[in-house]
Length: 212
Image (cartoon, rainbow, N blue to C red; front, side, top):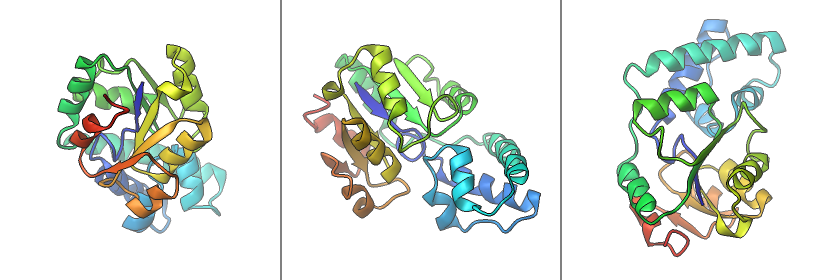
């Protein structure tokens, strides 16, 4: 099984997330995070991301901001984020090889289902897991759940992601990982979690032994 992160790995959505976080902060009357700070928390579940960005914020205000973020992000999908170049060909190629495909994401279930429908990918993945259904990355629970659901051994799975949260989650779960260099965290940060490879384009994944 090949398990993909979504934002920053298959989908070029970082800009949408940053804008929605900043707009939500302004709406609730707090200082908006910088682009760098907002990008850094992409991959975490929304409650965990807001707690990291605004550690002193009262719980009630954080809930208001989460609701504001959701509204702004949905509004941004009037021009939905595009898939990264090669993403569709990669998924098609892996399907042709008979590989099981899954998604492990910090998005909500509603958010993931919405964007999969936008891109016509509802039937591509054999299993998906979202942060509001389980524990947020880097806790390994969502990976354990995906493998158990499909009856896949840990040694027969690999996690592909663009953040240290993805790769740390894989390490915590005892499965191999591949980092992508074009997402929100640097290759240097990804290497700290010992991925089997760091790729610069999605098409490179097809050449790795784990994909073959």
